[in-house]
Amino acid sequence: MVHLIDRRIQGKNKSAVNRERFLRRYKDQIKDAVSRAIKGRSITNVEGGERISIPVKDVNEPNFGHSHGGVWETVRPGNKEYLKGDQFKRPKSGGVGGKGEAGNSEETSEDEFVFEVSREEFMNYFFEDLELPNMVKTQLTATTDFRQQRAGYKMSGNSSSLHVLRSLRGAMGRRIAVGGKSSRRLKAAEQEMQDLINQGVDSDDVRTLELRHEINHLRTRLLAIPYLDTFDLRYSNRIKVPKPSSQAVMFCLLDVSGSMDESRKDTAKRFFILLYLFLTRSYEKIELVFIRHHTTALEVDEQEFFNSRESGGTVVSSAINLLNTILRERYPTSEWNAYVAQASDGDNWDNDSLTCRQLLIDSIMPLVQYYAYVEITDGEPQNLWREYEQIASHYSHFAMRKIEDPADIYPVFRDLFKKQNAKL
Image (cartoon, rainbow, N blue to C red; front, side):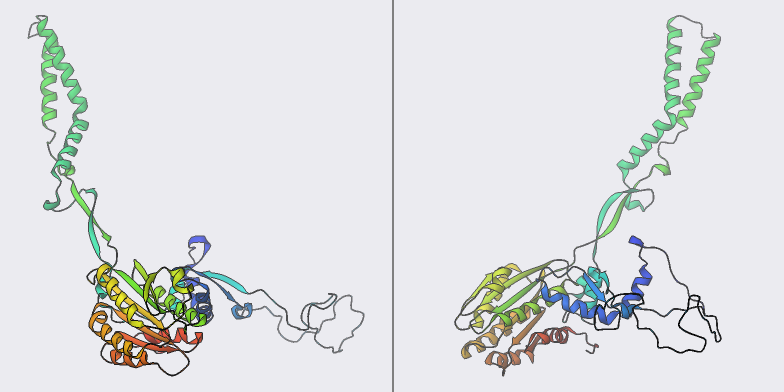
């Protein structure tokens, strides 16, 4: 078996083949580092790369050493303490001759191996084995659409793309370039001939005969130049350029009532970040709509969405009504793929939970690609959860999960968006 290694140097003196092999080998360490990196980022600032640290002991590789072979007995020059056959303990690691002790450990410490993963590598590791569920417009996002765009002219093509004006212009330029010298000489000869005629020179004069012969020759030469040659033909050149992929809107619904403390809001924020970053893998253009609610709902910016403090009860239907209004007025389904992520502690007025279920069934679910509801609570399911369970039984693109602590965010997210054949 013959192994071929591609050692061609890539950009910045890095071997792409060796880098891919390295990433495969330390896949688990990289995935752990990527999971930790997401905690300190905002929703719209999660698409960069990341610096990954790996202990040096994990990147050590076996190597071959050259040995004398056999059994050797050696007494080094300068030895004044040991004789042949003496036995002594192996010296401690860290070398000899040093003074003092750096610590209680006998092991030597080394710096960790640090390298950077690109944005694409970061996203591939973070969303491995995941896919967008219920992708109705799959053909718009999984494959790239192209449109025809003019890009100058070419010398070959079919008759329908022949550009007549450009071809005639090229033919004229060729005739001028090829017959320019002969044309200038013809004009000069004709002028000289006219001057001789005006002077009354006999037509049988030698110079007159020479000019007449030269004029006939030049005219014949110019007439031999074709008016339009195949070399002159120019055809309109059209190239395919990728069209912008379909666009998506992500609605973030957050309960900011008194029962939602800061820790629960932080948990919700992390879930929203995951969904936003996941959508960036399938859509080039994504708009975010933040809707916060307690007894009333309001569309706000991201800063106010996560940091405002409210008190009082909870009326979830106010947020769903506002969602329905925004969705129908600003994001038609013919142009936008809509995704909704709702986070709440599940507490809601009893009668309002029934209203929420009817609103979702009648107005929201037919318009959205996916609706994810996460209930952040460590207690028993609330009345909103029980009403939402009836929606989940009828719509496959409605999913609901419970999150008890921040450690559940990533497993719940992977469970919501895992591939059909993926096992976590």
